[in-house]
Structure formats: C-alpha cells, structure tokens
Amino acid sequence: MLAILALAVGGFTIGTTEFMTMGVLPEVADGVDVSVPTAGHIISAYAIGVVVGVPILAFFGAALPRRAMLVWLMAAYGVFNLLSAFAPNFEVLTVARFLDGLPHGAYFGVASLVAASLVTPERRGRAVASVMLGLSVANVVGVPLATFLGQQVGWRSTYLLGGLLALATMAMVLAAVPSVPGDSEASGRKEAREFFGSLQVWLTMAVGAVGFGGMFAVYSYIAKTVTDVGGLERGTVPVFVLALGLGMVVGTWLAGELAAWSVYRSLLLSGAIGIVLMLVYYAAAPTGWGLLPVAFLVTATGSVLVINLQLRLMDVAGGAVTLGAAMNHAALNIANALGAWLGGLVIAAGYGYRAPALVGAGLAAVGVAILLVSAVVHRRSAGA
Image 1: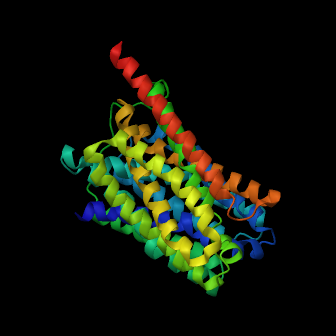
Image 2: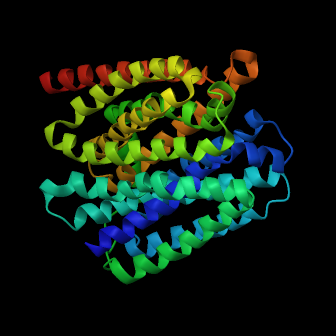
Image 3: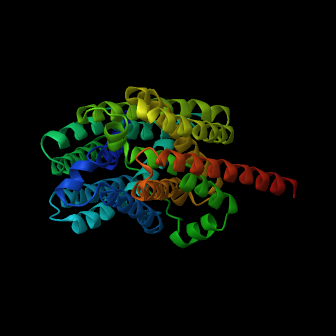
C-alpha cells in the first residue's frame, strides 16, 4: 500500500539521519576540533531531543489531524538538519542535533497509529513493522551511502542529505497518505494522566530505556572499533554499517512474525540473546572481519526488541493511544543517550573501544530483569 510506503520513507529519512552520525563521528570530531568521545555527545543530544519532544508534541497533538501533523513534523526535521549542516562549531552543532531529535518520536508514533488504522486488526503488527522497516532499510542503504559521502565530501554533506530526504518525505505523505482526523475527544492532559499512571507503562519504557542501551553502546563507536581494535582500513567502516543495517531489516521482519506468536516472549527472548551477543562482540572485536556477523546479529536482535516494545506499549497505554505509540521512541532514545554516554565513559577511562560491549551486556541484563518484574506485576494484578 502506497500510504504505508510513504510512512516508511519517513522512517528511512529519520533512520538515515540518526545513524549516519555514528558512521562519520571521527570526521565530525575533526571538523569541529573535539575528541571522538566528546563528539559522541551530539548523539546523546539528539537522543535527549527525542525524549523531550515526544511528550510535548504528543500532549498538544493528540486531537490534531494526523497527516498534517506528519508533514509539519518532517518539515521541522528537515530545517534542523540544515542547521546541523551549517553549524560553525561544536556547541551549535550540539544544539542543532538536540532540536533535530524533537520531531523524531512523535513522527514514528503518529505514523504507527496511521498505519495500524489502515489495516485489519490481525495485521496491525505487520503494519507497524512496515513503518519501522523504513528505519531498518536506512541502515542498509542510507547510512552506508551517507557514511561514504561524509568520508569523501565532508561530514556536513550528510546533514544536507538529511534535509533533502525530509523534503521528499513531505511530498510523499501529502500524495499518498489519506486524510486521517485526530481523536476529537482526545485531551493531552487526560492521555498523560492515564498513560503515566500505569505501572506497566513505566516498566515497559524502562525495558527500552535500559535494555536497548547496549546496542547504542557498541553502534556509537563502531567506526573506531573496526579501525583501532580490528585493525581494518577506514574504508571498511561502511561495510560494517551495512551489516548493522541488514541486521535491522531482518530483525524488523522477524519481529512482525514473532508478534503474532507472543509479544512478551519475543521481548524476553531477544533480551536474553542480546546479553550473549554483547559478550561475543567483545571477544570478536580484535579479529577484524570476524566482528561482521556478530554486528549483524546484534542489530537483528535489537530490532525484535524495538518492534515488540512498540506493540506492548500501545497495548498497555489503554486510551492514551498517541502517547502510547510515541513514547516508545522516547524510551529508546534514552537508551541511545545512555549507551553512547556510558560507552564514551569507559573509552575515556582507558578501557578501549571494545569495552562498551561489556556495558551493553550489563544493560541488556537489567532489561531482562525488568521484563521479569513486569510479568510478576501482571500475574498479581490478574490474580487480584
């Protein structure tokens, strides 16, 4: 369906822009004259922008027409990408990345609601996965190309590309997505009260905020891990970025299938496998090309977690559908900020560029523990 394709193109745009920073992080650091761990703060700034933007935009946009909201969100995304491209120094770039993160989660939340409304209930998981597939495909096509472009032309060109992709998304959404009214009875205050008053909501967001941080701990520093730890040439970095992206595509497709089996069990399985993979990543990093299949599996497993967390949060949100659809991305970008920050800390402390994988294993273990607590709470509530 063309409408879902248009929504997925928006996911492609956001995915390309978010993750390409990690592929060109050394170039960004050189360009604004800071160290690589310090440059990693712009990844955290973007993630914090997502976290701040989701509740604000969802609060005020619950009753707005959804197609119009998608267009305006993508327009803002394009403008802030251009600001990033022309940032004269690290401080301005950091602010620009924070601002660019603001529309991110709200776009995915609204797009997920629109996609789910266009299909029958039993196909809801696949429709949401299709929107998120745009983000995954970005890591196969958009991010490697943007990384190559940034290495050859300069890191600023990557953010110019992000602005052009945002413009293309706006055109496709206007052309293909039907006019979808907002919920006229929705109230930001009412949604917030219902959403944030649920313990299961908080537990589900905590799984994403902590458990998913491991993937960002390793992804944020993939370029230096490949070159400094693995001993490979700088030109091989786009190949590893491609492997990470392929893992996301496969994981996103698999998540849609596993959701029909069990959303909760899929989350538990992906979390447990994630712990093991982080330890394998640590061991494989010095082997160079031996890290490639492990990187693929890390993002495949992480993508299963992402999609099923989205579905679980939409389910436990009750009537707060706009917040429920959007806040998953706030939680995941807390994971982004947390993973990049903790990874930078252990690197700056002298433990090397593969040490973030051990941080990732610990974060994944905490995520699994929170899932088990969620199950206990559910059983007690059902019993009562």
